[in-house]
Structures are given as C-alpha cells and as structure tokens.
Amino acid sequence: MGKLLSNQQITDFAQHGFISPVALLDQAYCDLLLQRISSFESRRPGDVPWAFDIKCNLLFDWVYQLGVHTGTLDAVEDLLGPNLYNTDTVFRIKEPGASTAYGWHQDAARIDVDPCFLIVYVALTESSPENGGLSVIPGSHGSVLPFEVRENHHGQAMRKVARTLDVCEDQAVALTLLPGQATIFSGRLVHGSSPNPSSTRRVSILTDYTAAHARQSHGTGSGQLVRGVDTWGHIAREPTPVGDCDKVDVRNRREILNRYPENPLMGPLGLNETPQFPGSEIV
Image 1: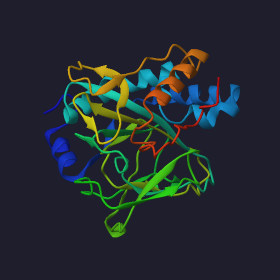
Image 2: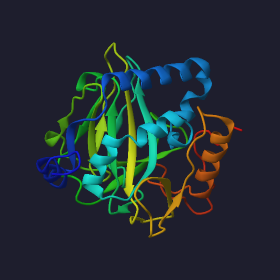
Image 3: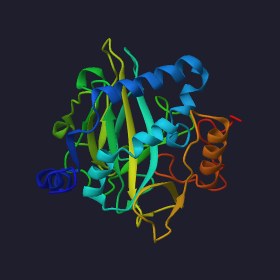
Image 4: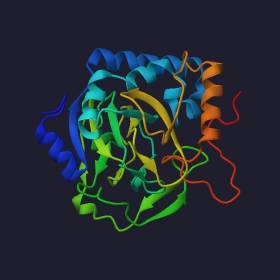
C-alpha cells in the first residue's frame, strides 16, 4: 500500500500506463480554483491565451499551491519515488461548442525522459466524452512510438506537435471524471481528446511531475522541486511565483523558458532556431 494509492492502482499504472479516477480535491477547492480562473479572465482577458499555457506554475501562486497539494504529491510519490519536480503545469479549457481537439499523441515523443515523467490531469468541472474529455490507449506507454511532427493549428501558438501514427483506436478508453477527480498517466501513454459539442465548459489543469534523478533525451529540463531532495543535478531549479501573474513572475517565466527552452511540451530546438513560446513578447 502506498501513501495514497492502493497496491492495485500501482500495479494498474505499471501495466496500463494510467489510473483513473483518483479522488484528489474536494468541491470547495475546485470552486476556489474556478473562481481564480474566472477572476483572471475578467481582469486580463488578453493575457489568458499565454498565461494559462506552458509553465503557468511559474506565474500564479495559486497554481503553484495546487502543484504541491499533499494528496497529489503522495500519489505521485507512490509511482515515481520521494524526490519530485513539477516540470510543467498547463490549463486545458474547452468552451461550449469548441472545435479544439488534441489528436493521438505521447507527451514524451519529441523529448523523452528516463524514467518517464507522469501527468496528473485534474478535472475542475466534469470531464467526459460528451464535452471533449480525455481518451487513452491502455498499455501504449512502453516506448515512444512512431510519430510525425505537425504545425499546431488548434492549440497553443508557436508550437509544433507530435502525432502518433497507426493508433489502434478500437482499444481507446474514454474517461469520465467528476470535479476533483484526476487521471494520472505516463508521459509515454498515447492519449488525446475530441471537440466539445456540449453546452458546458470543460476546465482541467495538467501538471507534469518528474523524478529528480531523471534525464532528458535532449537539452536540460527545469522545474520546481516540490518534494524531497535533488542530489543528481540533472534538472535546473525554477523559482516559485510571488503573486497572481505579477510582472516579476512573467519575467521569471520568460527567463526560464529562454534559458531552458527544450522540454517535452515544446520539443527540441532545430538548427539555429530561436526559442519561442506564448508570452515571450510580454514585458
């Protein structure tokens, strides 16, 4: 028995590459986070596309606090061990009627990590097949599968994305989560999501956790040490945010992404390529 997960859940993760659902947050915490999101959207609507994107845990103190939630870290420790980094947090929000879809992919395709990081997908509203929720291919996490790199037309700006080839879609499992529940899955698990044809908004937050002793296949990773110690030095340390997307937080995020631009979400840099990421032009 782990700190939070059962022996069966730990076994299922090793065999299938994911476990779901895992109860992490209560309704009051979900409501508080939704209020924070709504407040920022109302005050700074023009900043939402870049601020809710890659490494938003460097911008918002309340997102950082979610990343160090005790129950979440207990579950991650059960799977990765006691020394942990938060190496990325992003929002995934699909408005009613949104056509945004994320085709089949492995987050570790373009930059692999050994041992592989895992992703905690937390639903703040219900996440289901009806509103563009997560689907996975069980057991597809054993290795990085053949993929092709495409321009990203339906997600974050300035990104190329890897799409897994020859996926056995008849094996797909569509997941349903209630608010506060999570799916925890390997960065090598093939997954994706469909558009949201429903009349409800789907709000989720995804955090990547990486063992402190892990190494990237390209470049140097960076993260916030959220549990344990780091005696290996493979991952560069990131600061914690001081406020609610304050200027110092924006500068810190930009500096980190310029200094360590190669990460699983953004992929490796091409020859003579300059790092670019959402919000890079913001002072």
